Image 1 (cartoon, rainbow, N blue to C red):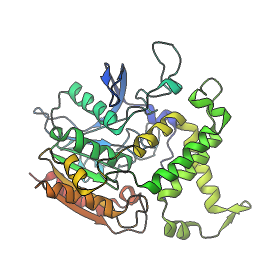
Image 2 (cartoon, rainbow, N blue to C red):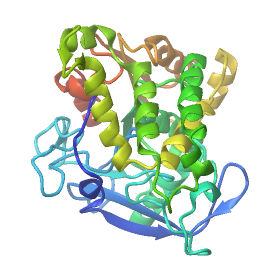
Image 3 (cartoon, rainbow, N blue to C red):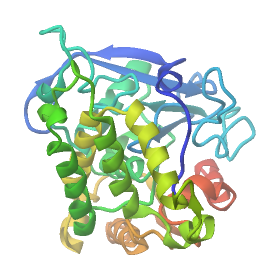
Length: 365
């Protein structure tokens, strides 16, 4: 099963801070900007600006990692981990989480207005890499006057951002906590993602990404989301939760997955969805021990890599490759494997298992 936060689009973009950064160079050599970046902070930044924890969110995630979504009783998506007195204690740490570059929850993305045309970017928005996403993160830190974060962490798409940070900006953090991710997207995932992409591109209403005047193809996005979810869903947990139960004439599992995906489709931009998947597909720190070691040779940051035993999307073997690459570079790297039947998203749900490990790691000197 997967983690699902039933917050609306409006709740996800409300109560955020925002900055505007100028043009920055993309990894393809082009320049893009200006860029608005929406972010949310928790806790207080110390006078020395040395207590920052930077959180990278997943593809469907947003900035609300703690407390409650505005005007609701819906907890932030990592509120069991982050907050006053929690494992990441905001009485001590200053936590920041921005919406990613290319996203649709406040930061400039395909659904944003292009100031040069007065219309939404749509298909004109550039394909971006994970390096571009992390470069944008660095711009936020520069604006806040933070030269080095105490730790950066995230899971899944967020974990891959941490890996990109390790490779491209290793000196701007003291500690790295990548969770449930891989040094390169597995071929099986690339294949699944190609199904998701084709489902959308083959819908005439998608109109090559320029659908804003007629409305985005909601049903097609929902179908794409179901196809994506099947990559990392726990078959055992699905069986436990639904079995072969019938509801309103259809299997309960089918009904539930479709209803959740339809809600996702009504709040998430299709172009952002595709471009994030594309950035994941093209992420590659190395196909062998030599190239991966080279990618992760710089920086003196400490690392805690967390994998999930039942993860069918990113096998624990993938995280062990990253750990070994850092150790071969004579760097500090620790490994923790969460024993769980919940599947890929276990790190969101089994906080009392991963929380103590993270707490200990970020509080060590």
